[in-house]
Length: 296
Image 1 (tube, rainbow, N blue to C red):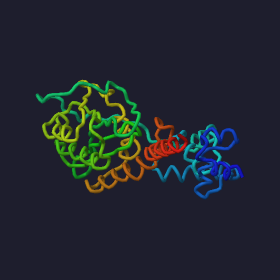
Image 2 (cartoon, rainbow, N blue to C red; image 1 turned 90 degrees about the horizontal axis):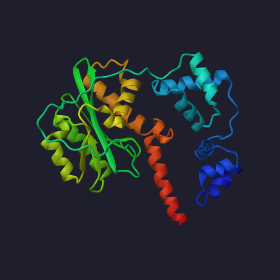
Image 3 (spheres, rainbow, N blue to C red; image 1 turned 180 degrees about the vertical axis):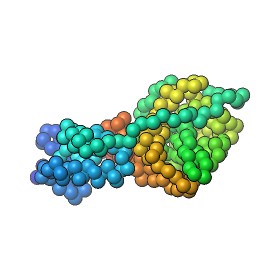
Image 4 (tube, rainbow, N blue to C red; image 1 turned 90 degrees about the vertical axis):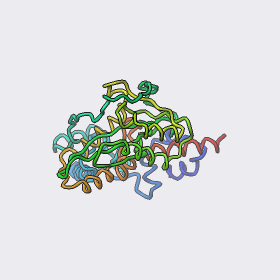
Protein backbone atom coordinates (compact mmCIF):
# COMPACT_ATOMS: atom_id res chain seq x y z
CA UNK A 1 0.00 0.00 0.00
CA UNK A 2 1.25 3.49 -0.84
CA UNK A 3 0.73 4.89 2.66
CA UNK A 4 2.65 2.06 4.29
CA UNK A 5 5.58 2.60 1.90
CA UNK A 6 5.61 6.33 2.66
CA UNK A 7 5.63 5.59 6.39
CA UNK A 8 8.57 3.20 5.98
CA UNK A 9 10.57 5.81 4.04
CA UNK A 10 9.39 8.87 6.02
CA UNK A 11 12.74 9.77 7.50
CA UNK A 12 14.55 9.76 4.18
CA UNK A 13 12.02 11.51 1.92
CA UNK A 14 10.17 14.79 1.72
CA UNK A 15 6.55 14.07 2.69
CA UNK A 16 4.86 16.55 0.34
CA UNK A 17 7.02 15.59 -2.63
CA UNK A 18 6.60 11.87 -2.04
CA UNK A 19 2.82 12.13 -1.75
CA UNK A 20 2.68 14.17 -4.96
CA UNK A 21 4.81 11.61 -6.81
CA UNK A 22 2.54 8.76 -5.67
CA UNK A 23 -0.62 10.76 -6.44
CA UNK A 24 -1.91 10.73 -2.86
CA UNK A 25 -2.69 13.61 -0.50
CA UNK A 26 -0.71 14.59 2.58
CA UNK A 27 -3.98 14.85 4.52
CA UNK A 28 -4.94 11.34 3.41
CA UNK A 29 -1.59 9.99 4.60
CA UNK A 30 -1.99 11.73 7.96
CA UNK A 31 -5.52 10.37 8.30
CA UNK A 32 -4.15 6.87 7.64
CA UNK A 33 -1.46 7.37 10.27
CA UNK A 34 -4.15 8.34 12.79
CA UNK A 35 -5.93 5.06 12.10
CA UNK A 36 -8.61 6.52 9.86
CA UNK A 37 -9.59 5.51 6.36
CA UNK A 38 -7.68 7.57 3.86
CA UNK A 39 -9.62 6.54 0.77
CA UNK A 40 -13.17 7.25 1.78
CA UNK A 41 -16.08 6.99 -0.62
CA UNK A 42 -17.27 10.28 -2.05
CA UNK A 43 -20.01 11.76 0.09
CA UNK A 44 -23.36 12.78 -1.32
CA UNK A 45 -24.28 16.46 -1.08
CA UNK A 46 -26.59 15.67 1.82
CA UNK A 47 -23.86 13.80 3.70
CA UNK A 48 -21.26 16.49 3.06
CA UNK A 49 -23.71 19.21 4.10
CA UNK A 50 -24.41 17.39 7.37
CA UNK A 51 -20.68 17.22 8.06
CA UNK A 52 -20.22 20.91 7.21
CA UNK A 53 -23.07 21.83 9.56
CA UNK A 54 -21.49 19.74 12.32
CA UNK A 55 -18.11 21.46 11.94
CA UNK A 56 -19.83 24.85 11.74
CA UNK A 57 -21.54 24.21 15.08
CA UNK A 58 -18.44 22.65 16.67
CA UNK A 59 -16.31 25.70 15.90
CA UNK A 60 -19.13 28.17 16.59
CA UNK A 61 -19.27 29.62 13.11
CA UNK A 62 -15.57 30.47 12.93
CA UNK A 63 -14.81 28.83 9.58
CA UNK A 64 -15.49 30.18 6.12
CA UNK A 65 -15.13 27.94 3.08
CA UNK A 66 -11.26 27.87 2.82
CA UNK A 67 -10.80 26.64 6.39
CA UNK A 68 -13.82 24.34 6.05
CA UNK A 69 -12.24 22.65 2.99
CA UNK A 70 -8.98 22.04 4.85
CA UNK A 71 -10.83 20.73 7.90
CA UNK A 72 -12.82 18.26 5.82
CA UNK A 73 -9.74 17.03 3.98
CA UNK A 74 -7.78 16.59 7.20
CA UNK A 75 -10.63 14.42 8.49
CA UNK A 76 -10.14 12.21 5.43
CA UNK A 77 -13.15 13.32 3.38
CA UNK A 78 -12.79 14.35 -0.29
CA UNK A 79 -13.88 18.00 -0.52
CA UNK A 80 -13.61 20.22 -3.56
CA UNK A 81 -13.37 23.97 -2.99
CA UNK A 82 -16.19 24.86 -5.41
CA UNK A 83 -18.48 22.18 -4.00
CA UNK A 84 -18.00 23.25 -0.38
CA UNK A 85 -18.48 26.92 -1.34
CA UNK A 86 -21.72 26.05 -3.16
CA UNK A 87 -23.16 24.01 -0.30
CA UNK A 88 -22.31 26.69 2.25
CA UNK A 89 -23.71 29.47 0.05
CA UNK A 90 -26.93 27.62 -0.78
CA UNK A 91 -27.55 26.79 2.88
CA UNK A 92 -26.53 30.19 4.31
CA UNK A 93 -23.58 28.75 6.24
CA UNK A 94 -20.94 31.44 6.64
CA UNK A 95 -18.32 32.69 9.03
CA UNK A 96 -19.42 35.38 11.44
CA UNK A 97 -19.49 38.87 9.94
CA UNK A 98 -16.72 41.27 10.80
CA UNK A 99 -17.39 44.22 13.08
CA UNK A 100 -15.18 47.13 14.04
CA UNK A 101 -14.18 47.82 17.63
CA UNK A 102 -12.62 50.81 19.30
CA UNK A 103 -9.02 51.00 20.48
CA UNK A 104 -8.08 50.77 24.14
CA UNK A 105 -4.73 52.52 23.85
CA UNK A 106 -4.02 55.53 26.07
CA UNK A 107 -0.95 57.13 24.52
CA UNK A 108 -1.47 60.53 26.16
CA UNK A 109 1.15 60.15 28.85
CA UNK A 110 4.62 61.45 29.61
CA UNK A 111 6.32 58.07 29.95
CA UNK A 112 9.23 57.22 27.60
CA UNK A 113 8.33 55.29 24.45
CA UNK A 114 10.50 53.00 22.31
CA UNK A 115 11.23 53.20 18.60
CA UNK A 116 9.35 51.01 16.12
CA UNK A 117 12.10 48.41 15.69
CA UNK A 118 9.70 45.81 14.27
CA UNK A 119 8.84 48.14 11.37
CA UNK A 120 6.01 45.87 10.16
CA UNK A 121 8.28 42.89 9.60
CA UNK A 122 5.71 40.35 10.72
CA UNK A 123 7.73 37.22 9.98
CA UNK A 124 10.07 35.35 12.32
CA UNK A 125 12.48 32.60 11.33
CA UNK A 126 12.05 30.65 14.58
CA UNK A 127 9.96 30.61 17.77
CA UNK A 128 10.69 33.07 20.57
CA UNK A 129 12.34 35.65 18.35
CA UNK A 130 9.55 38.22 18.08
CA UNK A 131 6.46 38.63 20.25
CA UNK A 132 3.70 41.18 19.76
CA UNK A 133 1.28 42.30 22.45
CA UNK A 134 -1.92 44.26 22.85
CA UNK A 135 -5.09 44.42 24.93
CA UNK A 136 -8.80 44.68 24.21
CA UNK A 137 -12.14 44.84 26.00
CA UNK A 138 -15.22 42.62 26.37
CA UNK A 139 -18.59 43.73 27.72
CA UNK A 140 -20.47 41.67 30.32
CA UNK A 141 -23.62 42.42 32.30
CA UNK A 142 -21.35 42.96 35.31
CA UNK A 143 -19.27 45.55 33.44
CA UNK A 144 -16.16 45.65 31.26
CA UNK A 145 -13.54 42.92 31.16
CA UNK A 146 -10.09 43.39 29.63
CA UNK A 147 -7.87 40.86 27.86
CA UNK A 148 -4.12 41.28 27.28
CA UNK A 149 -2.19 38.84 25.10
CA UNK A 150 1.35 38.12 23.94
CA UNK A 151 1.64 36.53 20.47
CA UNK A 152 4.61 34.69 18.98
CA UNK A 153 4.95 35.93 15.39
CA UNK A 154 6.56 32.68 14.25
CA UNK A 155 3.41 30.58 14.56
CA UNK A 156 0.88 33.22 15.71
CA UNK A 157 0.39 31.33 18.98
CA UNK A 158 -0.98 33.18 22.00
CA UNK A 159 1.84 32.38 24.42
CA UNK A 160 0.59 34.50 27.31
CA UNK A 161 -2.61 36.23 28.36
CA UNK A 162 -4.27 37.92 31.30
CA UNK A 163 -7.93 38.78 31.94
CA UNK A 164 -8.91 41.43 34.49
CA UNK A 165 -11.77 43.84 35.26
CA UNK A 166 -9.41 46.84 35.16
CA UNK A 167 -7.08 48.07 32.41
CA UNK A 168 -4.01 48.68 34.56
CA UNK A 169 -0.32 47.89 34.09
CA UNK A 170 -0.53 44.56 35.91
CA UNK A 171 -2.73 43.06 33.17
CA UNK A 172 0.07 43.38 30.58
CA UNK A 173 2.85 42.39 32.99
CA UNK A 174 0.89 39.26 33.94
CA UNK A 175 0.46 38.31 30.27
CA UNK A 176 4.19 38.80 29.70
CA UNK A 177 5.07 36.77 32.79
CA UNK A 178 2.88 33.87 31.65
CA UNK A 179 4.50 33.94 28.21
CA UNK A 180 7.99 33.95 29.69
CA UNK A 181 7.30 31.02 32.03
CA UNK A 182 5.73 28.99 29.22
CA UNK A 183 8.48 29.61 26.64
CA UNK A 184 11.62 30.70 28.60
CA UNK A 185 13.06 32.57 25.58
CA UNK A 186 16.74 33.43 25.37
CA UNK A 187 17.71 37.08 25.92
CA UNK A 188 17.34 39.28 22.87
CA UNK A 189 13.70 38.58 21.99
CA UNK A 190 12.02 41.59 20.34
CA UNK A 191 8.79 42.55 22.12
CA UNK A 192 6.47 44.84 20.18
CA UNK A 193 3.37 46.64 21.47
CA UNK A 194 1.57 49.92 21.08
CA UNK A 195 2.76 52.91 23.09
CA UNK A 196 -0.07 52.81 25.62
CA UNK A 197 0.56 53.72 29.24
CA UNK A 198 0.37 50.07 30.34
CA UNK A 199 3.27 49.04 28.08
CA UNK A 200 5.25 52.22 28.73
CA UNK A 201 4.86 51.84 32.52
CA UNK A 202 7.90 51.39 34.75
CA UNK A 203 6.53 48.02 35.92
CA UNK A 204 6.25 46.60 32.41
CA UNK A 205 9.54 48.04 31.19
CA UNK A 206 11.19 46.57 34.28
CA UNK A 207 9.88 43.12 33.35
CA UNK A 208 11.23 43.43 29.82
CA UNK A 209 14.68 44.25 31.20
CA UNK A 210 14.46 41.42 33.72
CA UNK A 211 13.74 38.94 30.90
CA UNK A 212 16.40 40.42 28.60
CA UNK A 213 13.87 41.54 25.98
CA UNK A 214 14.20 44.42 23.52
CA UNK A 215 11.30 46.86 23.44
CA UNK A 216 9.64 48.04 20.23
CA UNK A 217 6.52 50.21 19.99
CA UNK A 218 4.13 51.21 17.23
CA UNK A 219 3.99 54.72 15.94
CA UNK A 220 1.34 56.93 17.50
CA UNK A 221 -2.17 56.11 16.32
CA UNK A 222 -1.04 53.50 13.79
CA UNK A 223 -2.78 50.17 14.38
CA UNK A 224 -1.15 48.63 11.27
CA UNK A 225 2.19 48.59 13.08
CA UNK A 226 0.78 45.81 15.25
CA UNK A 227 -1.41 44.11 12.65
CA UNK A 228 -0.98 40.43 13.72
CA UNK A 229 -2.25 41.09 17.25
CA UNK A 230 -5.05 43.27 15.91
CA UNK A 231 -5.92 40.38 13.58
CA UNK A 232 -6.12 37.98 16.52
CA UNK A 233 -8.50 40.28 18.37
CA UNK A 234 -10.54 40.68 15.21
CA UNK A 235 -10.89 36.90 14.94
CA UNK A 236 -11.75 36.60 18.62
CA UNK A 237 -14.45 39.24 18.41
CA UNK A 238 -15.93 38.00 15.13
CA UNK A 239 -15.82 34.29 15.90
CA UNK A 240 -16.73 34.24 19.56
CA UNK A 241 -17.55 37.50 21.34
CA UNK A 242 -19.91 39.30 18.94
CA UNK A 243 -23.37 37.88 19.24
CA UNK A 244 -22.62 36.41 22.68
CA UNK A 245 -24.15 37.89 25.80
CA UNK A 246 -22.08 37.29 28.93
CA UNK A 247 -24.09 37.53 32.13
CA UNK A 248 -21.02 37.55 34.37
CA UNK A 249 -17.30 38.27 34.09
CA UNK A 250 -16.62 34.68 35.15
CA UNK A 251 -18.68 33.39 32.23
CA UNK A 252 -16.76 35.59 29.81
CA UNK A 253 -13.40 34.53 31.25
CA UNK A 254 -14.28 30.86 30.77
CA UNK A 255 -15.32 31.47 27.16
CA UNK A 256 -12.20 33.52 26.38
CA UNK A 257 -9.98 30.76 27.73
CA UNK A 258 -11.91 28.21 25.68
CA UNK A 259 -11.32 30.26 22.53
CA UNK A 260 -7.61 30.90 23.13
CA UNK A 261 -6.29 27.56 24.32
CA UNK A 262 -8.34 24.59 23.15
CA UNK A 263 -9.50 26.30 19.94
CA UNK A 264 -7.22 29.07 18.59
CA UNK A 265 -3.83 27.67 19.63
CA UNK A 266 -4.58 24.01 19.02
CA UNK A 267 -7.25 23.77 16.34
CA UNK A 268 -8.01 26.99 14.46
CA UNK A 269 -6.57 27.03 10.95
CA UNK A 270 -4.53 30.15 10.25
CA UNK A 271 -4.30 31.46 6.68
CA UNK A 272 -0.78 32.83 7.30
CA UNK A 273 0.35 29.35 8.39
CA UNK A 274 -0.96 27.51 5.34
CA UNK A 275 -4.22 26.78 7.16
CA UNK A 276 -2.50 24.94 9.97
CA UNK A 277 -3.14 25.64 13.64
CA UNK A 278 -0.36 27.41 15.57
CA UNK A 279 0.35 24.21 17.49
CA UNK A 280 0.51 22.07 14.32
CA UNK A 281 2.73 24.61 12.55
CA UNK A 282 5.21 24.59 15.43
CA UNK A 283 5.11 20.80 15.70
CA UNK A 284 5.82 20.41 11.97
CA UNK A 285 8.72 22.87 12.21
CA UNK A 286 10.25 20.96 15.13
CA UNK A 287 9.77 17.65 13.28
CA UNK A 288 11.36 19.08 10.15
CA UNK A 289 14.42 20.26 12.08
CA UNK A 290 14.74 16.86 13.76
CA UNK A 291 14.48 14.98 10.45
CA UNK A 292 16.98 17.38 8.88
CA UNK A 293 19.52 16.52 11.54
CA UNK A 294 18.96 12.79 10.98
CA UNK A 295 19.49 13.15 7.22
CA UNK A 296 22.59 15.31 7.75
